Length: 34
Image (cartoon, rainbow, N blue to C red; front, side, top):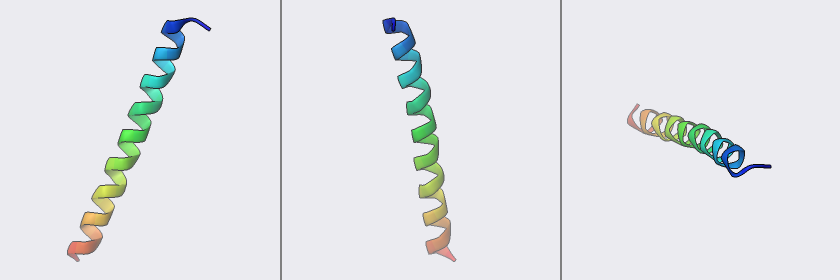
């Protein structure tokens, strides 16, 4: 496995995780406001 492949996999996984975390935070904020 080349370093470039590992970096690409970590980057894509990181973006997915960040997007999921932001979505969960937004849902919690919206739920608490109502």
